Image (cartoon, rainbow, N blue to C red):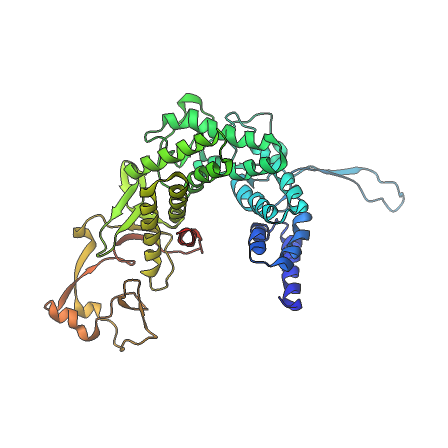
Length: 438
């Protein structure tokens, strides 16, 4: 890295810290990536940023301290006439789950690779703040908290399973590093509550709905959509990874049991074969909602290829590896089948040939007056030549249309076979993660 680029990187760190008064998620979350890539100069530029982070401030709001200052003196008397008191900001909402996985996780990953005591010290500082979220009736961490206004014990309303069950890796790893069992106990208490109080009340246990009410006793609602997508994904991912983290300890068997039973139940309830696309063996982990299994692939669900592959290797579950490969291939195909090569956020597939196929007039299909060239066409994953502008198959000279009496049958949707598409793309890593694992 050149001196000029190092200066720009350093200035970017400084500007992000000084002007936004936020914590710089990308800087902290990628500390371990810098170390893995051997970018030690860049890592050293990030260390001062991490060292000076003030966890009392969240989005410019100080949740920890009020201020008392003297009023300015009058013209006649240099003695202040009164004091001014500014209370702490009570409108803070610290997102517990996101803060844990990005900041605490980023620092712990960097410490494991470097042994950097500064990074570990700041991880402990942050964990003390996040620990306040567990001060609930059930022990389930709150999703968003004001760390300065926690009563002795408070009750939770509705919370997502991802928020509830995705704190174990960071807190248990910190416990291992520091020897402080408190962090382990906080995460394990959450798992015990889910295992003993929530899972037995679910319709398809041990799968847990996206939203539930942990502090409502035996009468609390535990119902709703089941999936491995957003609001649920990392809970299931953390089950197998926590089992790996805990190694041969007896408590690891609980995490193994819940993981294996979750996958077995998911195969019966939310796995679905998508056979609407010719010559493709697609597998979706859909969404069970209102009694209907929706055959969809959400980009966030595409982490499951990696999860199942890891579980297959650790637990000798060979059929899970077959599913892991199919899910990864399905997610890759969703990218390869689009003109941009980018995977849509959510794709719901047709469920029957009758709905999925249409017969079209070839004149309506052949809207491309230009000759196909390497600039205006591309080859998809299956070797089919398609137009860049709309993804349709190139039909040179209308040969298909003539062979079918001027008409042809076409699979609806883009990607083909899709009934509904949420087309936005926000550069999610889940599919790449699964490809990397495979």
